[in-house]
Length: 597
Image (tube, rainbow, N blue to C red):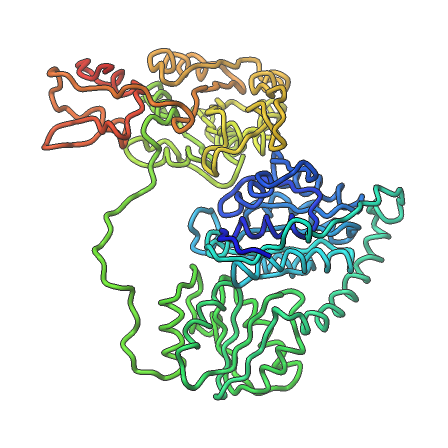
């Protein structure tokens, strides 16, 4: 053993390698991305690593590896589980041979997501065991436990860390390489009665799943990371995940302590341990993120075992119904529960931070793409359907170019729906290159087949920028280090039946505007690929400068909102540290006051 200081996601990735991982696939999404990237960094070539085109593809690939007896892992964030839910629900019935972990990172807050959905609830819905780590160290060792449970009961297992686990750091005792667990996959053994899902098999397996989950309620009551600490009072606190760490921190400073239940496996729920806890308490408070999972289970158990314990939490209004917990909030809640009269704890006094709304980076080609479409459509009735990615930030002023955003790939179909009801509206759908491959291709085919009238704008910056610049089919490289043939977006569009596909550099503003005008005037589904690399991937050029011709009209700032354009001493100036020299502002300036340095 040796100590390493690891981020939570790195600990999960390293824990998987230690536990004998054979195959890992996923789709990038904060806060989950670093797990797969960690495996790729330490991979000696014995593990297959893949960024898949989406979460569905990743889960199905990992299932195939598991059918061979290999230990596999899938990584995604909570909204990605929606994409993977189709194969997941069936896989829960079919089962696995090699251990399989579905690592789903939840995002209470939410900090970087569309939703706050709670994967603990999804685990119960899908009838799959769920592990919920309360610390970075616990997450490291839970991976091994999850693989072992998966193989013993032939079921996928969900591992559900949250943002504060994924991105926290801790010193972990990591085994030496010679102590790693090694597996020898048997290979795929044909057996249609096991691997081919038919209604009769589903019915039979459903019965077995219910029997298994009843058994697991007893097994998991004995699981060492589910814990019950009897206190001095008749009050109890039940918690889970990172919230348990906050509770422990507060309780460590109390002389008289309540009983404390930590739920590490929210499904199947550790029933016997929970009943033992309830019998010690007259009143219990459930401190959890996000759904009242523990609160509902404890309320049910009180009824089942005829216990008079009063259960409080989100459903009773004692805990906030949405958003993440933090140490200050938990301490205030516990002070209130314990009847303390302390002044509510506040964060240490510090100067108020300035507002920092998210913006497109200086030199981002998406800004130029949005501005070109906006300029071309000035005075016309148009709708701009956005998508998930950096370019969602095109909704901010002064661009104001994202009218809708639902989920990955949805903009393509939403634009079609609007166009069917409002045929006099010029409909645009914006999608990034990674999202195009992940979930927009089917929408394009739907539009061609159903004779939609819309313009697809593919914002191709040659990377998956928002989640950390991961490769995708259009980049020509894989996570195994292979250089492969790039999948050509224009060729895919032509193959899907899109007749007009134009590719243009958005930083050539005049040509970009003219292209938008000409292409959008055509009927049917047509596409413009705005191709220019992400500003972070290119070496910045010399910054542009402002000449004496500047009249301080501020059109460059008002039109573009680029963080590289600032007001300094009452005048428009270029922030040299941010400017990449893209030259867009020089093309916008009506007085040619901005020039290359």
